[in-house]
Length: 319
Image (cartoon, rainbow, N blue to C red; front, top):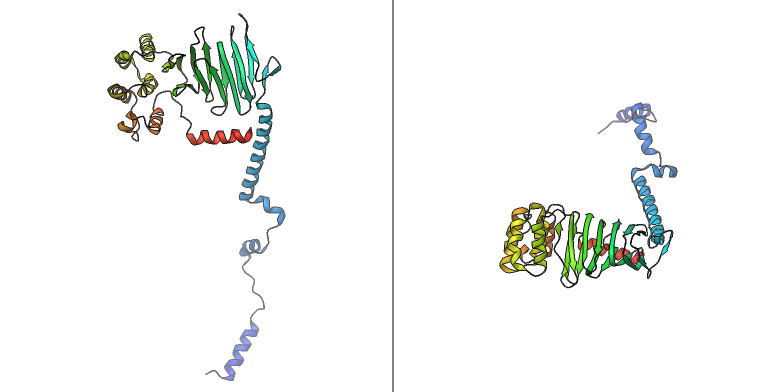
């Protein structure tokens, strides 16, 4: 139990304490920063806010560019005037013409050529080549620029190529940049840069060949496309590593034991990735073949289905 004297001494000690206690001077900057409220004018100095503001500016600029691009993107030009859907062009014996394809590229029309513009929108450009030669240079999303020929449809994937239709209505495609699909019905050829392919009206789209393929190999492939399956032995003996694209197409154009022979030769020249099994390749599993495609010399990735779906959605909205 405390005595009155002890209570008096405690009160006197408390009275002698300072009324305020200042922290050491070197602590004040940190304390002051915590006590000072953020001013509204300083909100933009925060890193997260800066990133958000920059992102919004980029979105606004991109949206503005897309609006302008859509307004001008569908207009074709020929010699300073608009070349509209429904018009045709026939060049003379020594005449050439340059068509500007909206904002995505150009088509150089060679002598003695006939072309018709079927569709001219920023979301879809479609040209028909009835005869002659065109040289195409396009930078666009997949399936935006399309050329119809008497022997099939050439679908651009963002590339450069030459396309010829001769007097027999046979089409010859030579890709120099990127890659192209050449389609007729359910038959399709994927043609990367450095490859060529022929399409005959009665036979469909042929098998792609490297531009420097040996003459004997080119002849054998053309005969195979014409229905002479017995030349497969010659093809398998003549192909080089850079001809793997040719064999990749032959997987889907052979059956049974012949397909197994093609698989074995292709796997020797360009082994499939570990994720692609022999069974999957032989049953022409779509994903397996696409993964193997990436391992072939000179190929470019095939756009996944979801990318094409996204572009299709965007084109519908933009159109």
